[in-house]
Picture 1 (cartoon, rainbow, N blue to C red):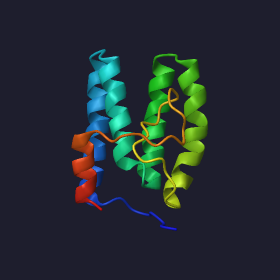
Picture 2: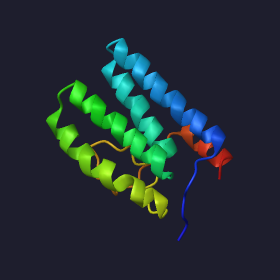
Picture 3: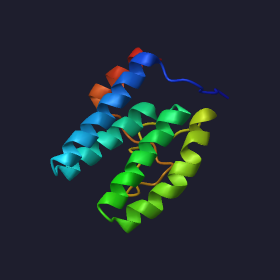
Length: 121
């Protein structure tokens, strides 16, 4: 079992960029693009407890802002459990983190994110 404590600095930078992009596009009313940046932040940070939980927190805030009850209900258990799963190294690789996908379903990682993740293995 692999325990993940701290995200590599360079990878953290990419997660933060995605979260910032989500914020900026949300403020412009580009909701689909904003959500996609949150999914990308989730994929990049999901192996690390703090960043994984941070992605779900931002997803939960997004859901509250757009008043999406299904997403709110779906994010609460993900927020509570996601970081623990990251800590013990048991994550569904590539999962985008939204309530529209099963929480334990592995998914294909977009090529550009796969390249980033490979640099920090």
